[in-house]
Length: 86
Image 1 (cartoon, rainbow, N blue to C red):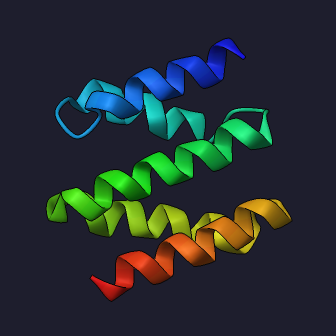
Image 2 (cartoon, helix red, strand yellow):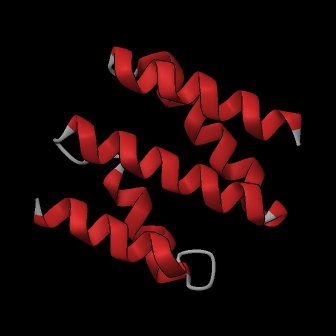
Protein backbone atom coordinates (compact mmCIF):
# COMPACT_ATOMS: atom_id res chain seq x y z
CA UNK A 1 0.00 0.00 0.00
CA UNK A 2 2.91 2.34 0.70
CA UNK A 3 4.15 1.95 -2.88
CA UNK A 4 0.77 3.02 -4.22
CA UNK A 5 0.78 6.06 -1.94
CA UNK A 6 4.23 6.95 -3.26
CA UNK A 7 2.98 6.72 -6.82
CA UNK A 8 -0.03 8.89 -5.98
CA UNK A 9 2.20 11.53 -4.39
CA UNK A 10 4.60 11.47 -7.31
CA UNK A 11 1.78 11.79 -9.82
CA UNK A 12 0.60 15.10 -8.40
CA UNK A 13 3.68 17.05 -9.47
CA UNK A 14 5.31 14.65 -11.90
CA UNK A 15 5.06 16.94 -14.89
CA UNK A 16 7.14 19.53 -13.06
CA UNK A 17 10.05 17.49 -11.75
CA UNK A 18 12.26 14.95 -13.54
CA UNK A 19 12.84 13.12 -10.25
CA UNK A 20 9.16 12.33 -9.86
CA UNK A 21 8.89 11.23 -13.49
CA UNK A 22 11.75 8.80 -12.83
CA UNK A 23 9.91 7.53 -9.76
CA UNK A 24 6.84 6.80 -11.85
CA UNK A 25 8.97 5.11 -14.50
CA UNK A 26 10.44 2.88 -11.78
CA UNK A 27 6.89 1.95 -10.86
CA UNK A 28 6.67 0.22 -14.23
CA UNK A 29 9.17 -2.35 -12.92
CA UNK A 30 7.46 -2.92 -9.58
CA UNK A 31 6.49 -6.48 -8.67
CA UNK A 32 2.88 -5.39 -8.09
CA UNK A 33 0.71 -5.40 -11.21
CA UNK A 34 -1.50 -2.73 -9.66
CA UNK A 35 1.45 -0.37 -9.14
CA UNK A 36 2.68 -0.97 -12.70
CA UNK A 37 -0.77 -0.33 -14.16
CA UNK A 38 -1.22 2.79 -12.05
CA UNK A 39 2.20 4.05 -13.15
CA UNK A 40 1.14 3.55 -16.76
CA UNK A 41 -1.92 5.71 -16.16
CA UNK A 42 0.09 8.42 -14.43
CA UNK A 43 2.69 8.55 -17.19
CA UNK A 44 -0.06 8.74 -19.80
CA UNK A 45 -1.57 11.68 -17.93
CA UNK A 46 1.82 13.40 -18.02
CA UNK A 47 2.22 12.65 -21.74
CA UNK A 48 -1.18 14.20 -22.41
CA UNK A 49 0.04 17.45 -20.83
CA UNK A 50 3.66 17.50 -22.03
CA UNK A 51 4.30 17.03 -25.75
CA UNK A 52 8.06 16.88 -25.18
CA UNK A 53 7.68 13.69 -23.12
CA UNK A 54 4.92 12.12 -25.18
CA UNK A 55 7.10 10.16 -27.62
CA UNK A 56 9.16 8.43 -24.91
CA UNK A 57 6.11 7.61 -22.82
CA UNK A 58 4.20 6.27 -25.81
CA UNK A 59 7.12 3.91 -26.55
CA UNK A 60 6.99 2.60 -23.00
CA UNK A 61 3.24 2.15 -23.13
CA UNK A 62 3.44 0.34 -26.48
CA UNK A 63 5.94 -2.14 -25.04
CA UNK A 64 3.76 -2.78 -21.98
CA UNK A 65 0.67 -3.15 -24.16
CA UNK A 66 2.46 -6.03 -25.90
CA UNK A 67 4.23 -7.71 -22.99
CA UNK A 68 2.41 -6.86 -19.76
CA UNK A 69 -0.29 -8.71 -17.89
CA UNK A 70 -3.72 -8.84 -19.54
CA UNK A 71 -4.85 -5.87 -17.40
CA UNK A 72 -1.77 -3.88 -18.39
CA UNK A 73 -2.31 -4.72 -22.05
CA UNK A 74 -5.92 -3.58 -21.92
CA UNK A 75 -5.03 -0.37 -20.07
CA UNK A 76 -2.13 0.25 -22.44
CA UNK A 77 -4.34 -0.02 -25.52
CA UNK A 78 -6.87 2.42 -24.03
CA UNK A 79 -4.18 4.90 -23.00
CA UNK A 80 -2.44 4.74 -26.37
CA UNK A 81 -5.71 5.34 -28.21
CA UNK A 82 -6.31 8.50 -26.15
CA UNK A 83 -2.75 9.76 -26.61
CA UNK A 84 -2.70 9.11 -30.32
CA UNK A 85 -6.00 10.95 -30.74
CA UNK A 86 -4.32 14.14 -29.49
